[in-house]
Image (cartoon, rainbow, N blue to C red):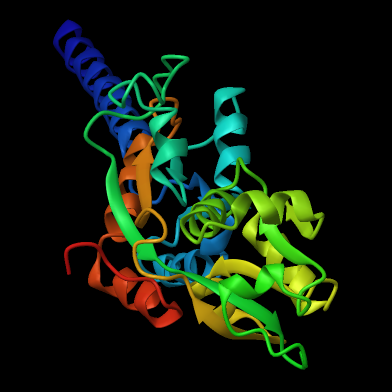
Length: 276
């Protein structure tokens, strides 16, 4: 009888051990778990990133990509203030540098350390163009025209917005920035999409945007491309943040942005791929 009881107790112990191990394995299994990746991206990437996210659903159906599109300066400030963000994609190196402890200390003056080491890379390049409302009769044909009677108002990004910084560089290289700034003709915008909206609504005579925004917009026409070497190269850096709460899923999506499928979307909209 004691022998039978001993066998029964041993079987019970084995059952409990196996149950505990199975439960532990299931709790550790990453497959099939729902996750969210929060991406802060420059407003000029709205169309391309939304399309790429739809494509990514087929590869990772359990991952939700949540976007926050705005000017790179605004996004940088939100990150600095503690906003939840896994991936940052800026329309300029400056805003990324301001969060990267490895960047020039003259740019990262606050010694911020948000960028995850070795995750940063240059994602795409862009160009700057001058646009007018589609039915414009002003005969604007060049950036120099902003100081002529053809233009009463020109929409530009604020000084903390990359497209605004590139605009200032262009007009400075043409030798007309100080006159333009003093003319009272500038209608400032908080991001490139706002510049685009002002031109689409014909609230201004022209505006300076990225070629990719003009390509996906309705109701505007491109009349000029920024003169060669009139501004710094427009490079969009991307990186994971050290504060990411879902680094595994974030890294997977960041890797997907380097894929040929993602590159085809960027190029279709008008971006170019660095070193390609």
